[in-house]
Length: 290
Image (cartoon, rainbow, N blue to C red; front, side, top):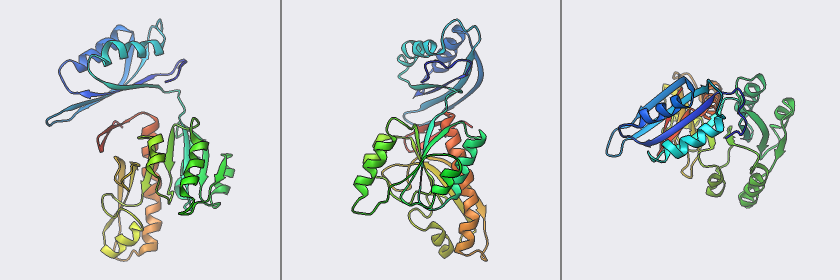
């Protein structure tokens, strides 16, 4: 949470057990502290243990109370009473991103371009790779690049080196076609803060060579999936997906070429929604307020 948000709007995210009075308590508190609601989205689940999800964006009209103080008071007065998991951020925040890639340039280049042009409100602080292939891309955008080669025998040490370079420096790790499986040790350092792009419409064709699998099955639609990385390969909470129609004439190289555009768009959406605090994780699902 920023200490001095200045003129920025505040983004409040809440999830808690669903019960009467939650919405009233949140909005009554904000009203009493001079908040002007700019955007509000909510969602409730059903079942034995229903959950409530809320994202509110507001600014403080009177400005008499600092935004950080209003947020602290919310935790003491409202969140504790309703057993809420909650967080606050500001529109002026620029989350720090590390991109991990291997050899495919399409997603890395796309994210670098979006950050440079301001379409992605974030700062890409480093590109890490296990190969040198991506160095020219990072250099073109004046983003620090480091190559950390890895083999099966050196994987533990290589991940240790990556963590040493990232800890305290980044808020989000993006796997932009990083062709290595991260260990639980790495993932535990960034829970729900590692986004992976998988080049299929999960859960179909998880694992290696999904385009080859798609060709063998003769599918008529290919897809891409952005999800939070977990210990289970390609099984983390899904943030965004999209598809593209193909035909019997499309062979594996065609599917790869066609799929690259999907990968770029799907990953960019997921990263943008994450840095704008639009994604809330619900067990192995997500609630995405677009």
